Figure 1: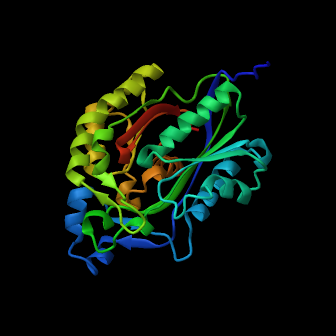
Figure 2: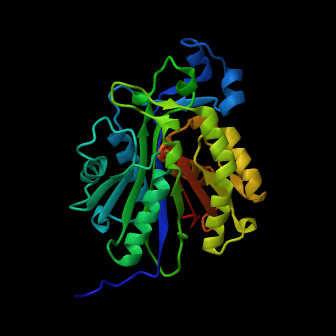
Figure 3: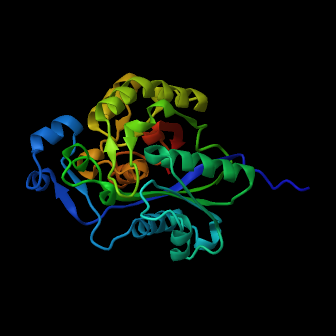
Length: 318
């Protein structure tokens, strides 16, 4: 038996993102349901969200975001040997999105699988990618979070239609002489699994908003602090805090308890809505593009959602 060469660490080499061109404002929603801009912003902090165009699939969005990340990394498709797509909104469970996306990007014969940890999915996939690189199971990994929530939402139900949106974010993970992805802190609260649920394809997404809000605002800040501790990073050293873009009030509550006042806090939800597994890479990629964070700084990412699942880790911004 021969053990492959093991990389000392893994890191995010590049990011990419994609949002549909179709912008849906709060005023647009107010035309079809009992709601208004003030009501929506006061409860979830969203001004507008993106919804896929007719005929635009989850795989389409994932491919564009993945292609951008791959181009930014300077690698060729031949350099990638594992593709992971984090998603919970595929229209059909077979085939998986990862094999389709890999083929479209010209990545030949990679390992390919999807991860469903809902809104925590990107963090789960990133941890898996980093472990694969460090163990020598993969050279470079393309990790994508992609969701088309619009096809699972009842657009007459203001408790969900005002929140969820579509989009994709991606990262390329490769080997590094020094670790650029810290240890993951992950877990679940299966006793609350019915707080966010899609019963079957004949039903829409249902969420017990108050249950999720209380759980997120009381349970997750210790997870964030533990992720910093395991990475050997004090919160005062963080350049950015990029939590799942679930709800602006949740984001700000966790950020206050984290105690990293110097860190730029992602508030992508205001203009992007809740894109589940896509929200963290989408937000961080957009922050980097706008110059709000610098390459080489440290970011704490924290995913949480249906399951109820959660995961967080500290990463070096590419």
